[in-house]
Length: 159
Image (cartoon, rainbow, N blue to C red):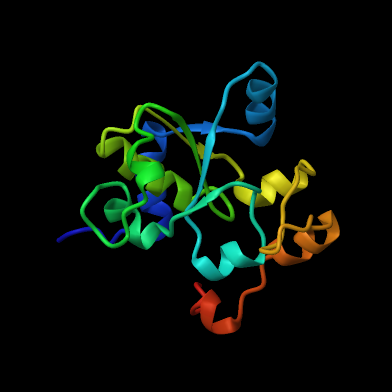
């Protein structure tokens, strides 16, 4: 009998193999001259609401083909970034772990997951922008990142 994996168990399985950076780690390293490519792997609709200015938008669903030449989804900037420092971003830091792990398998040398995701980025009051480039007020982002689940999303009550 095989064990059913859950989203959380899959993240937990690969997380020890992925380097993570807190938002303040990134800011500190940037102060010392380190440059990062920010790769946002959220869905396009999430990215359109708000994101880190200058982040590359590559949804996790097309990540592998975006990382290689020869596909309609190819992102040349990403293909050519195998030796650059890349911070993979999502809402909470879980999808980014799975994406960073995948990129490591694809021979990316310096890939990190943003620990705490954009929620933590916002909690640290680092800048986010709307799709039009205007800054997002911290309170607006706080409301956006608040978790709201329906009863169907919660699933059956466990006894």
